[in-house]
Length: 460
Image (cartoon, rainbow, N blue to C red; front, side, top):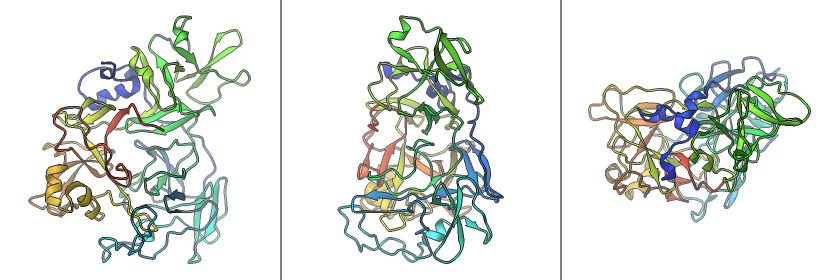
């Protein structure tokens, strides 16, 4: 089966996810993503996040986020570009009916303890005499304070981030890093996204956040590849090779001025981009943006500016009907739980420190005990080691929330981005994904998604 052979850089993460193979991407030093330097306000720094690439932080090291407006089914919410923040100290108590079929006016869970938008997302306050610099501007909040904005969107920090460079509050998954924020439509909540400087890549390329790492793709969203048969800054793709592989051509005028980028001359007047010394290609067999069929050809690899931190050593990779998934030691597919409420401030409900009623509704008909059976937590082995992406989290089995310090019956579970991962009771053999899209709006707003390392039919 063609899917059984894992891909270049993706598979290079196999040193990440399995204890076996030395993969082609391992030959391609993953490195750290380079970025474009730009003017910043005093105190703003760039933190080299291993999950989201370079991110901007305030003087205390707290990651900065935007909340761009998004149109949902029955209206939109989020901040408008160039406008003051709508995230204030008003505590929401009811949903507002942005997502059909739910009418407005339904009581939100945990109203007594629910925090306001501003408590969850403190504004990035600017000094009274703060001056604009570059893409950074100052907008006035309704309470009279100044708030920093980047590229027109006001900025926040997250109360969930605990240490410098954390991006627990939100992430860039599913959005190209140098594409405009706030894409319209869809069923997913209006998410907060960390901001950072633009990747230092030519205009033909963008960098996209994936569960495997920061993937380099064309601005048309087609995948790009490297070939093990090439030499540093030398293409060996001959006439037969070129029937299936198209060089990514570089402009005729101008030379590469970016670190890690070079331009090679294939033939007189025909120039090709190379990244970290490896010539770049697209694959004729990729039918549309997002496909990665080229990695099924031996010796051809995807390209990443940096790889994600390694998953637990006991985890495995399995082939499913829709692509390659991360699985537990027994081969059972792992699932990520997604949740955002339908209040005006669209607070997340996918973390153990947020209301669990939403999750109970889709995994156990309102019963936490049933959820423990239907979607069991992935338990961590004694002595398991954490990293920036994967941590061991103590969960109270009676409530689904974070356990109290020293709680005797706490479950020690694996968490990705501080959120537990699960398996599904009806997945009877390795590679089954019966809980993919399980929940409301195909799992986008409240439900479960398989942990895909490579999704064949992602349908951009």
